[in-house]
Amino acid sequence: MARRAATPAPFEGDGTITETTLVEEIETSYLEYSYSVIYSRALPDARDGLKPVHRRILYSMHDTGLRPDRPYVKSARVVGDVMGRFHPHGDSPIYDAMVRLAQGFALRLPLIDGHGNWGFSPDDSPAASRYTECRQAPAALLLTTGLDEETVDVEPNYDGSTTQPVVLPAAY
Figure (cartoon, rainbow, N blue to C red):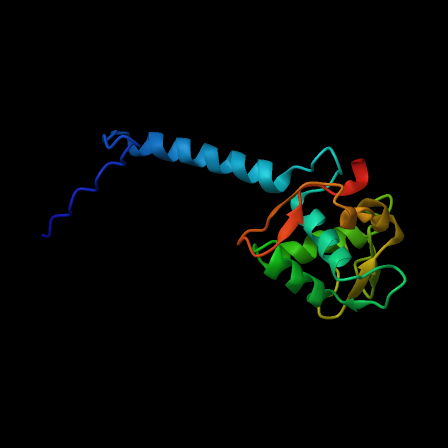
């Protein structure tokens, strides 16, 4: 029977080796990861009331000029733009977040003006993104007005190729 090589312990910054049990390391790492996910993706920011994915969708739509007075575009195009430039977590979560922003029964004021089957009740599934079209709703303009005037701080996107707002100017 072959013997397995011992796995080296992690190094500290000063070059010393610290030994921890596997259970301790998993508990610590999992708690840090969970906190990071909750803080960076799942909680709405109190300043504009949006989760990062919602903010990125609205910013992308603002950036590409999908205003209420312009024609609808395919939702898949918006999802692809958001995924490629700001939110590399897959198209399904982006489209699901976009659907919620378009449903009148989910929000008091929908932020996306949807064309097609966006789901008519909580029990009704929306059509796939390739079948629906969208643009910003008038209420979304209230959240994005002032973005071009440097009213909010920006941060680099996930790969540093562009920037995105930390929050939308709604609160300012």
